[in-house]
Amino acid sequence: MELGAFSVSLSVKDLVVSQRFYEALGFEQVSGVAEEGWVVLRNGTTVIGLFQDMFKGNMLTFNPGWLRGGEALDTFTDIREIQAQLRAEGIEPEERLDEGDIGPAYMTLVDPDGNKIFIDQHVPAPSRD
Picture 1 (cartoon, rainbow, N blue to C red):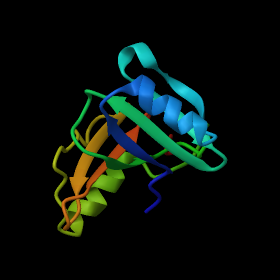
Picture 2 (picture 1 turned 60 degrees about the horizontal axis):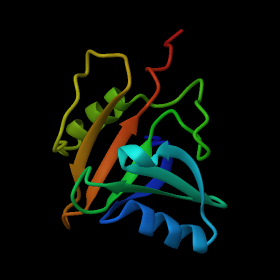
Picture 3 (picture 1 turned 30 degrees about the horizontal axis):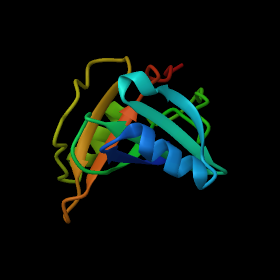
């Protein structure tokens, strides 16, 4: 199962302060809208998202259909297939998605130790030609 691009999503108290801190560590903003409370930063191959007032706690984030730089892939494992495989293994998502849909979608999981995992597909399902 290919989960796509990986990043860490951090829930921050003050986006401006946190962004300044990570920029001092060499990160640069590559996407996001600070006025909406979120930015994505990159330093080399490391990607972190900073999110203010959007969710509680930090999460591991995977983006099916994307390369590390946010470029869309032509072929990839669709999130609905990932969910079906997880459920077949006895892993029930905390937030499930509609498997009949074909557009962008997301789901959340919690690992056995309580760590949140966010699987967020921004691109439509790949074509099955």
